Length: 321
Image 1 (cartoon, helix red, strand yellow):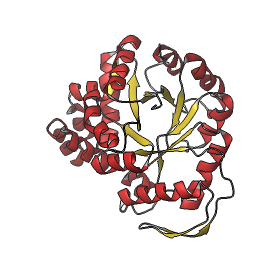
Image 2 (cartoon, one colour):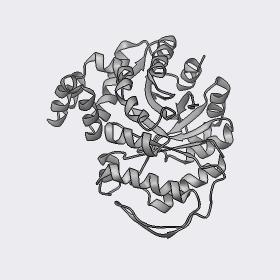
Image 3 (cartoon, one colour):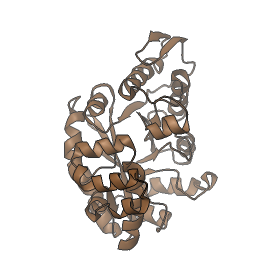
Image 4 (cartoon, one colour):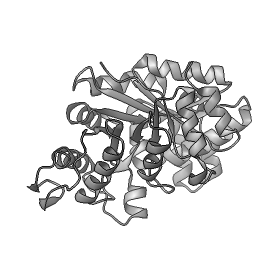
């Protein structure tokens, strides 16, 4: 039976990590099953989950996502194994390409052949986490004589972040499921069948942007800013072209490329904000999230906007009923 969960993204923005123990332990009391980290320019993808493993021992720990490029194979295996050893049976490790911005601009690593890089890392991790000694020339890296010294008693799930067909099918074929991001309820029907080509039991985790506010001006302002920040990154732009949003988003892309940031924000249609960001009253938000689940998302991983709302109250208001 496919795992069915209901998660929250951690850590919470604007709150010191050391002060979040009560917040995270309360998530379990509220009925959340999972916490999911991310890794971009703030916290790393492992430390908040390690803390949560002790603060809330019932929660599943997921990363959405850790980049395949920014740690060497052996170091990544050590990180995953350590978390899995700390929380046996409760880890869903999410790996993905990330983007040229994070990999090249911020980490000075060539963003080359991302599909094969993720595929090779997943294959390497499967073997490494079993404790076998590895000497192997993969397409995108080589490993000579590595043997993991800490083999977790329960192997973690490995989830693959995916946008378009190739990676979605890889997630279904070689991963335990897919992590999807920045898409509408209707888009779920486009992506999920590719994952299920690998089997009907594959998980589909969706990171869903949630702004539980009825202040329409705030929703549109912050929503457009978030959309522009992501959807001008090449991998996300191509994803939304594939989904059929080229006509709606081309004015934004053109103005952004021309350096007109304000014009680009204004060019994002309200309908796109409403499609990609869950907003409104808590009841309306929960109904919107339920539609993602009905469309094929097995675990929604909510990501709260850190502005304009009381994040802790939002966790309470959006808790599963």
